[in-house]
Every structure is written in C-alpha cells, then in structure tokens.
Length: 347
Image 1: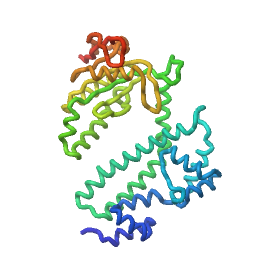
Image 2: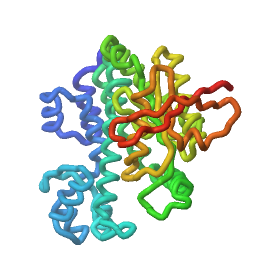
Image 3: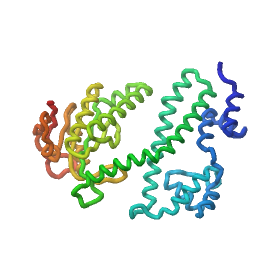
Image 4: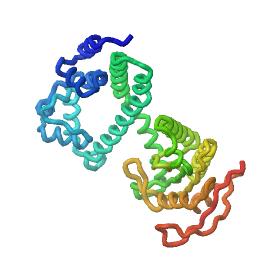
C-alpha cells in the first residue's frame, strides 16, 4: 500500500525541510528528490558575503573562485558551510601551483568533478530511480533512497583524498617513464591507439534507449578492463571510437588487439590504428602529429584490421605478433606518404 503524503512530508521535515520548501518541491514535481537536496545542503547556512568575511577576503574573490571551479552561485543564497569558508581561505591564498597560475589547476579540478557529478546523477536516475518507479516504489521509498545515496556520496567524497593519492602516484610513475630522455616537459613518448566500432552507429539507431544504455555501459566497462590488463589506458570514447594510450609499443599492440577481440565477440566489427612517438600532453588529453597519425591509420583500416606506423612495427619483436607491409599511404594532413604495416596476431 502506498505510503501517505503525510509520511513523506514528515520524513522530509526530519531532514530539515520547511513547509515552504516542501510546497515548492511538490509544485516543481521533485518532492522525493528534495531528500537528496537536504542531505547535500546540510550545514549550508552562509552566503558568499559571509564566507568572504570568514575567509578574510572579498565577495568578488569568493564568486570568482566558484566560477573558476565551474560553479555559479547567487551572493545572497545560503549555499555555503563553515567548511566551505575554510576551503575558500586556502584557495584564496593559492597564488601559484608549480610555477603556474593556480586558476588553471582549479579549472581542471572543477571540470573533472563536474563530469563525475553529472555521471553519478545519470547513473542513479537511469539505474536506480527509473526501475524503482517502474516497479511501483512509493515516493517515500524513493525519498529515503535519495537521502541514503546522497549521504553515501558525501562519505565517498570524504575518502577521495586517499583515492586521489593513489592516482597521483600512478600518474607520476607514468610521467617519469614516458618522459625518460625527453627535455621538453610538455611531451610524453607514448603509443596512441584508436579503435573504431564499425556497425555501432546503426545499432544505436535501432535499439530502445534502455537497451542502448546497457550496451554502452558494458562496452565502456570492458574497454577499461581490457586496457588495464594489457598495460594501456582508455583516454576517452569519441562517439563510436575509443582512444587509448600505452607507455610502450608492445603494450599499445596488446591493448588495441584486446579491444578488437572483445568487440568482435560482440558482433561489432572494429578496425584500429596505432602509432608511437612524442605527444603533447595537456589536462589529461593528448595532441600532436602522432595522435593524428593513429587516428588516420584507424580511418584507413578495413574491418578487422589494425594499421600501425613504423614507430610501432620497428620496435616490437614478439613471437606471433607480425607486421605485414601494407604499402605507403598518403594520409590526410601529412605531406609525405607514411610506411604502414598491418598488425597480425598469430599467437
């Protein structure tokens, strides 16, 4: 039997909701979602002006810091807690980071956290809230789950420092290995690969939304798993293409081949390209001729084929991995023809 409206209002009141806020949420059609709002704003009693006073700075600095982090706030809204004030105090004193404007680091952090937040909300709405509503869950049950999930998210956020330390150590190790012998600190020597999912676009047009989401989730999860096992790393998914990097040509070959096998088993005929050399690194992404070359090689490959540049073919000597000559190709954006080989795995 559905829970009464009175029970839902009592639960929201226990979280700190006022009658006015409950009424506004009901009119906006997200009464159950108010539970998460209340948990996430617990302790938010300060305006930007009050934060500025506590942090010993100006309201303009507070608002500018928020904008740099990708947040837009009204200076008169009670959107901040005492913890926020201490954070702003520390950030306001950050004049530089590694010899550069501290604002650049804050923009990177803000953009990354914004993507994490968007992903977290989408996962909850699609994987929890929608099935719960479809199965007849009451508004009270949904509100309680909203509140519990928001509380868990805050706990996870508190543990991010430990997780970040692990990622920093891994990033430092990658940086040191990929920059060995290089004088230009903006460069890293990497194998860059692209795997194109042939047949995915028409499949995406045919599937219902829920089934398409399930396929995308599965593909992304497997791509990360396969890359990790092979010594590579997924950089991003670009439409129906996966971009990966690895610290050496052999790991790059293993990563691309692993992805090719996994996709082929799913009935998605892939083709790929792989190149090795110096790439420009910025904000966790990679640029330059080597990246462009890998992308062009993927475009040139036929379904089931991986084309590689001489930097890969000349560096890898593993029994069972063959590099069959595939001619010299005049690729878009390159003035001279490139010697190309097809990577064949006969192990």
